[in-house]
Image 1 (cartoon, rainbow, N blue to C red):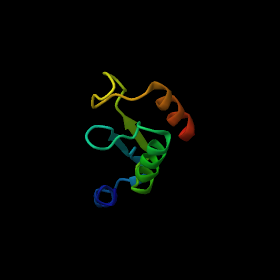
Image 2: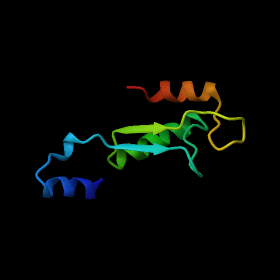
Image 3: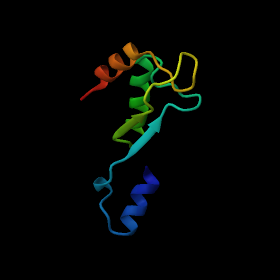
Image 4: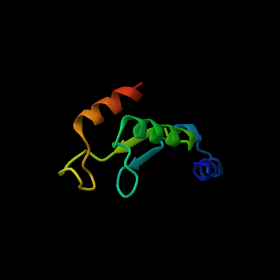
Amino acid sequence: ADRVSQACERVGRDPASLRRSVLLGYGADRPLSSVAAFEDAVGRAARSGFDEVVVYWPMGQEGSPLWADPDVVVAAVAAVRT
C-alpha cells in the first residue's frame, strides 16, 4: 500500500482516490472458515491499507478449496458489515 501511495504521489495523483482491494480465500488462507477468521482477515487488510476485502464465492463440497459453510458466511459478513 505504501509503494502504491508513493507511485501516486510521483505522478501527481491523490492516493486517497484509489480503491484498494484485496482478494482472499485461495490457498492456505481461509477467511470464511469462521466468523473470527473473517474478522481477523478484514482487520489485517484494513491495517495494511486496504478498504475492500473480496472473497471467493463459497462453492464445491466440504473439503474443496473454495467450500465454506453458508451459515458461517452469512454470520461472518453480518459481523463486519458497515
